[in-house]
Length: 254
Image (cartoon, rainbow, N blue to C red):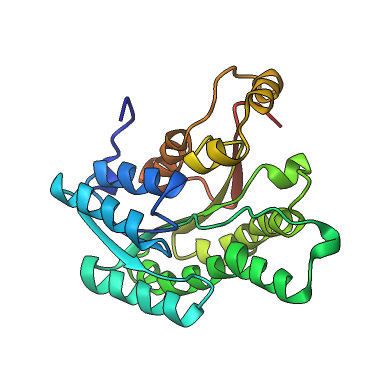
């Protein structure tokens, strides 16, 4: 990594990242590993995830991957138990997994709606439910839910995705107060357009990037590391006074 702060409070803590095999998730796993955290991550994409875990393990980091389809809540719970057995009680959760598949309003069926909610929202609540007992016992925890600037922008072509991401703000605020008495903090992040490999391959053509830079206050493209560094801060004790908030990280786009 080019630069970044070191947070002593993250050393040795068990961190769980969902959707950690690629994109922003992989950057999160790498950044937490660099803090000497004990990092568990879940993903449905096994090949890329195992490659990442091997790379970081060879570098001397403590990283454990569990394959998991997050739409299967029984499998999610089982995977979280496996991470806990391997790495110890989980006191940082980053609900990162999502999929911004494009869809048109007239094509949406009830079955597709339920599937997209399961992919982008439902698992966040059940992951929180599964790790909160660890956090309560230690009277310390940080939960970071990954939202999106897309619903604030009113991005077209993915109404269920934007609805899911808007709901993450409600989820965050809906549980932050009840968990606060246990010293568990709950925040969300709304990233702008983060140029992951997938975004570059599918949508980031020259015209789109030119418009993006025109609209952003900061005239540079955002990368996954820009989000990972924010997450590190929110996970650490340095942000101990911050909860019940949604932070927009978008280079001044919105």
